[in-house]
Image 1 (cartoon, rainbow, N blue to C red):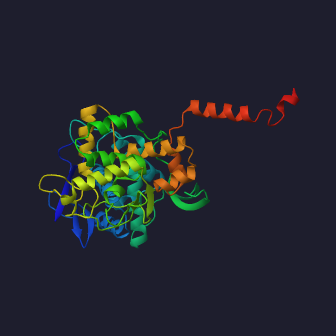
Image 2: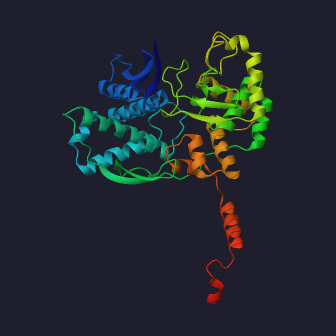
Image 3: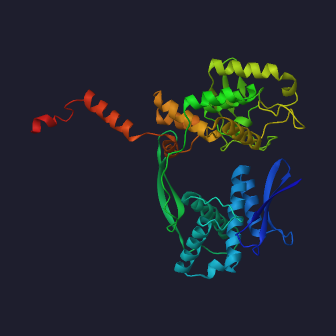
Length: 386
């Protein structure tokens, strides 16, 4: 089966229209880019997307890369260039060319239509980062392609999830837009209670509760199978990486982890299972579609996002699955969990990612400092210096 998303590059109706499509083969979803004017496949970008899929990158990640490349192809067409033309450019010309791509998407020219959502600097940089990944693939895979002059080798340091300091070599670009550092948006407990009350069924209530209590990514939670991945004695739920989920979700990394669930929430899980036992018998997944032609099939991310939008419209409370993940992190911090524990529970690879989840205010930092100084008065005997 071939599925397709249409991407019209730029606001000018004369610009080329690209399709970002996908096909399922042998249990995997492969993405491709093709020109709608003649249905021809863009060979090198599609080969790169296949490489990412066979490297076990998640379908969502590969889809994001596909759209990034399609935007870049629209930019190339507007400039009257092919992707290989950059190899003939000098360093300064390459720098200007890629920076102009950033300004191009920043101006919303990558999407056609009167109403355009202008991406922030971080999103623009992410598009270009995906493009550089494509060029590095060409460099490694094909002899006729060389290296980009604007990418330089740099050593970066980071702290992994268990607090060990490490370094790695990466290719870096000095022309990215200045990205504003921001903490991820979370949600307040009182608003979660309102959302739970607004749910029309216990499945949706259970979904919200488990997102808030486990910190799982939505794709991880939708992949949970109620026989294999739930410890009914210990009230625990497991993330188990699988590439063959019916709803095309998957864990971000090839690592399994367990999360403890409160007794109250586990009771709701058991109630949900009892209420929809007949439908659940038709599937191995914990979360399923409850009605319609897809009743009994594994719930999809699109269906969850649609449900959250309905709740937002009903309650006027902004909510996403990722906000509940941030809520999990911040609640654990407030209850004394160490940064390392929170990082492992979230399935992060490095501590900085976890730190970015935590909404620590300046007031909290001041209060913590005052408490430290109060408990350790005259710690350095500074009072003796006066």
